[in-house]
Image (cartoon, rainbow, N blue to C red; front, side, top):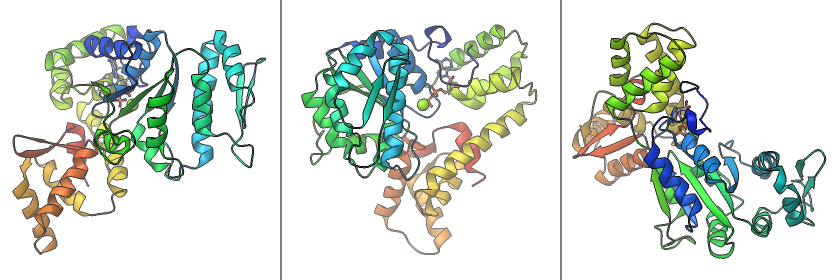
Length: 362
Ligand SMILES: Nc1ncnc2c1ncn2[C@@H]1O[C@H](COP(=O)(O)OP(=O)(O)O)[C@@H](O)[C@H]1O
Ligand SMILES: [Mg+2]
């Protein structure tokens, strides 16, 4: 169903994005070692990854890395164990091979009947994550390891993921890495592909970007979605949604779902609900940054795009003193790396129209 809220996994539920899907599926089947899927929140990264992984026919582990702030060893090992469990339950024919490859590895047990994986993450016999990857390579068939929202792995301060990824890249030819990130700047920093001091520096990678739908596509998406659930939505309301959500498929889905499944018929009410979701996300993003300056910037941009100099003035007015230009640029750079704002033609703007609404309430 097009209007279902969870990320799509089946080709028939995926609207358009044929080009992106073909690119990603080809990349997964090709010889590249590292693939990144980037794009704004709610533009369909997870959906695209899931469908492409299923279409590729290749073995894969899918790890959704929305870790708690205190990402301890157990959190991460549990996530990985869950992905292994999903894998062997989906591909029962691989069970024997996985068990053979993991045999004798500390801290992990594969049972055949019923099929399942058990891990240990305390004490001496705990599982070593890098050894696990070495063993995955020994299955003898390609395995894709997908980290969804990979920038969250930076919270894991007891394991150098950049080193582990570089090791996998260079030495484990059967293991291919797929990463995604809404906070793409952060993700690329974390991977260090462009940082000469990082282990992954200079490695080749493929990037697939998700995008906004065009207004025509967005209208088409809504029409198909409503006809699928056999609900009549007035055309002018659909047009309002197309205008309000700027081609972000996740918001269009949210609108379609609220209208047809939740019976919310008042557009403003739906928009308010969307914006309070966005406000929560925005608050948690900037609370981690620990500076009220971000709030001033976002409140400024809630009124519309603004050039650098206006943003600086607002900050200075607020603080009643002058602020170093480098500091202003640094603050803006951080918001760009988080995928919250973008710079276009000399002006800064909040990328997502619903975030823009929410920013007015900060
Ligand atoms: N191509 C698509 N067709 C239909 N619905 C989609 C599509 N892409 C995303 N969605 C919907 O949009 C929302 C956000 O998608 P998701 O894949 O979670 O995006 P992201 O991972 O970029 O945040 C979900 O409700 C999902 O079902
Ligand atoms: Mg996602």
